[in-house]
Length: 372
Ligand SMILES: Cc1ncc(COP(=O)(O)O)c(C=O)c1O
Image (cartoon, rainbow, N blue to C red; front, side, top):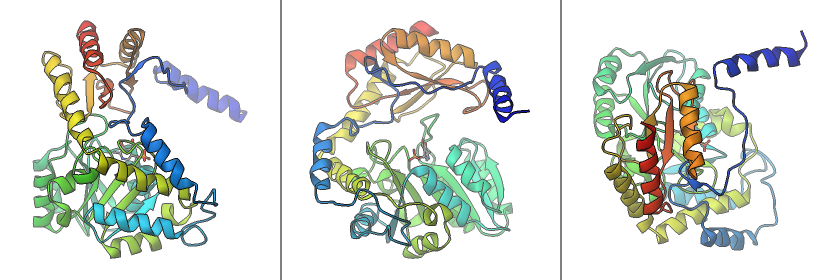
């Protein structure tokens, strides 16, 4: 059979399951309730100008190589030092994306004979990273501390526990204090993915671990910049030994072209910008509270006090139709289909932003009620 026919057959299976995907451009006429630009930094003209001005100093368009060869620039090292200070760690290491940072951490730290305990609802980048490791992988029930407790004491080798401070699909938070205590008690190593808390929480946007003052107890943290920071990239923060280990053993760090100077400058400036506009975090919380106050009666809305709000509409066809109805009312809300989420938990993933007005949020709440 020709390759194209093989592929077409597989695509047809997806179509039959109502989850065939296709790329579509954003409809800018719709109100944004779906991007990860929580604080509006991606659309900030001021930040854009700041980055452009700074970029005039660079003659290199690209980084020209892996960090271990020609891709290591003074600017990159300087920004990493600044990130380490921000995140209260000894060191930090930049990555092109959160996906590659998670791949790097999870493929290289746990070895054969070790155990990784991970939350059931972990992001695909965590799952893909673990699959590249030879360690034993054991899921625990989402945010269920007693399940972690049961599994942690029986786990073999070096034990790694992986959580997200804010879960990307449900929007709820990890019980970080309890998990940290459990890890401490059992000598396990905690890895926290701060993708959806970077920028939104903590001083200067340094995330939930720092906000809760747990930074000394979380040896490995992943921060991403493509969401609230409005740009692109990620970093891993931890001890000097952790960073040196990744530089030596993490293939997603070694075998790729280093971030270009423009992206690195964007990282520096987006954190500078946020430090100067710290009220954005509070503004986001106000939007979230307002939305929750209007949607108390929506039983299918999952509990969440973050910018990620999910309304469960079981079934791929149903959730696609629901999103379509909201689109027709001028609201950009996207459906999340299975298998991205478990069958039966397909949902509208609603994202609140600082730039959503009260009347837009009112219209959204009204239309969500009309769906049920
Ligand atoms: C929890 C989590 N970790 C990591 C990532 C990957 O980050 P990036 O988009 O920078 O690759 C995402 C992205 O959606 C995420 O939700």
